[in-house]
Image 1 (cartoon, rainbow, N blue to C red):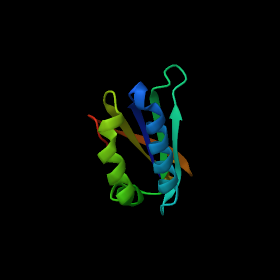
Image 2: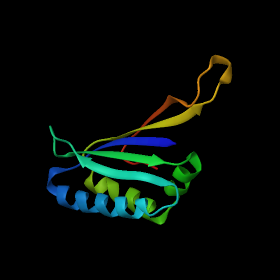
Image 3: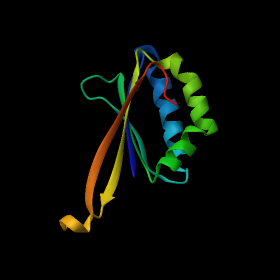
Image 4: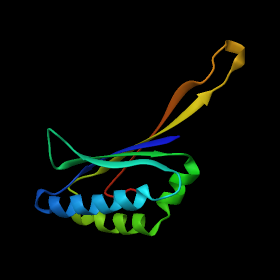
Amino acid sequence: MIIVHGTFIVKPEVQNDALEMMRQMAVASRAERGCITYEFYMGVSDPNTMLLFQEWESVEALQDHLDTEHMEEFVRHLPQILNGEVATRRYEVRVNRDESIGAQDVDAVRPEIETREKIVH
């Protein structure tokens, strides 16, 4: 499973537009093959900070998501709503079945961290 966490800081004057854009993105993404979870959240301490939480069945499913038309449209409109950088982190969750140490179904997390300016793709 692949987990992606993102942070978006939006311009206060376009917050409603940003929320609608993110709602549409979440609806379209949840309909994709391999999508487990796709949610945006508004920050409690700063309502202009939006958080994104995604779970995908595989790297291939995530890559297919990145290649969709709705992702291309989302990325094209991001500069109009952003007030800063987008930071994303990607984690791979694997099952370790190493019988030699007696571990069965132990989850291991290996973070892969990337930060990008203005757009995510």
